[in-house]
Length: 481
Image (cartoon, rainbow, N blue to C red):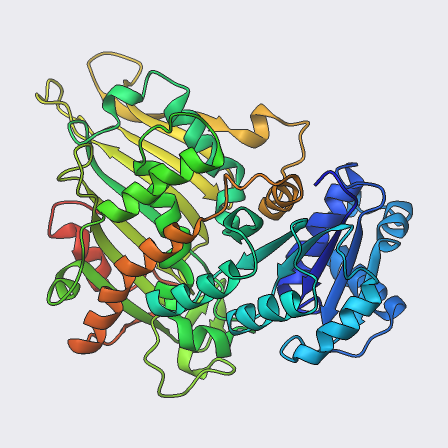
């Protein structure tokens, strides 16, 4: 935005705002990335004074920001940007008060509306911003996932947002796309001639994408019990990662070209419907168990979760991209809560050599780790020192923290918030992307209901239900540990 810019965070007292957004904005302020006159207004129902909100923000940011990065003088200058406005965002009349508070019915200052709220408020907020004349050409709106809970609801939300804001003004955020290693995946694929000739069905046996968490539902029980792992993780995070692995090279690196290629992959996903859900999907729910030596309760004993809940906390899928490059290559997706360890990674498993010349010859593997550490490793076979041809797996390792030791690792939200401010939508989802993902996910959800595929229990602190292992083992494969 060329004009002075303000950011309004609806849901400003929620975990997302205090745990992620404000620490990210503090770092951007600390690094001199925010315009000097940019203001940040938190909007929520809680009745707080400006100074009380600043104190709350400081407590939460101190808990999230590294001690070496938190400076009292820097915080004081950042806090001067912060203001607070108490209102109920579901009430239309409240937006008139907001307009008077901002004193800008003409929207002369650029504005970013960040909706860190429940999705059921998206439509009302957009409509009320328009009624209060707060949605001009010089505004942008940021939507957190999930965009709806089905294709129909996503279309309704997108239509309501689209009636007020043009597509260029809408930023649908998926924080996984802001991770440095995810962007390195694009660099790895499209800037290195080494991989392009072998990044296809003739050389790749299969692909694994795993996002595993040791945490449970925490304070999100009420939301999660109506969403589940499929809506919360697969429909957005995992499918976005799949798109980046499978997409063709865009004609240029800009928002529309990149998102055009991602949509093509979503449209090429082979449907999983009817009886296919029994063979190609696994649902699970964690039971009581131990993580880090501590006892944790079963999912249905978590706060705000129904005791008779049949919501899945684990999903594993066998997915096929039905196009020329990937025909016959299975993509295995897996995500779960209360797993044995926290990890997010993409594994590209190459096919073995056509003739085994040596006694031991494993297939090569490219592993892209997103968390807990960001690194890329290529696993090769090499000779052990000494007499004879004894082979052992070896790694070519790219550890980003070691390559750039002087660089502080940006949080994903820092990068994405800066992109919103600068108007770069490359790493954000377009309307047709969201709807194409839901069009593929909906038949799976329907199949689970039609064929009574209840979640399989797995003890907390394990790798998920046994059926998830069988999904690969029946085809002579196994999950990467």
